[in-house]
Length: 109
Image (cartoon, rainbow, N blue to C red; front, side, top):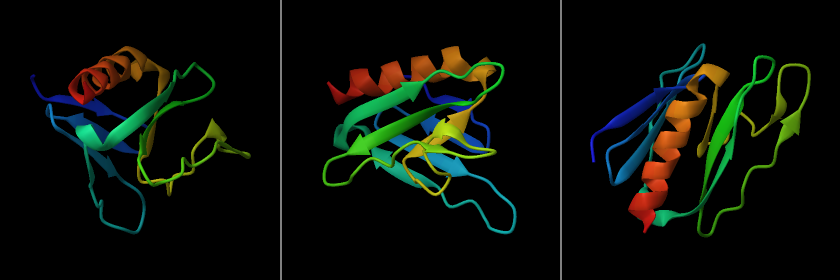
């Protein structure tokens, strides 16, 4: 498995075959990567983006509840930025994100 990295709307997500690394960026703080072992993922949620709304990917882990979708002026039907197991992405990254999620699903077995 080659390393895959996809740029999201406010960060990046990478997968090396065993570990998923989500690094979010923002104003006023340093990025703190979140590492998730692919074997610990029990489910994934992927919502494709379009020209008007970003999509998102979310990894669900055993023992933790999924962050629900929020709706507001600048957040439309996606998990909160504070959810460490999700990342929003622009519609141009739809295909790359689908390939990354497929690689994670394959690694999960």
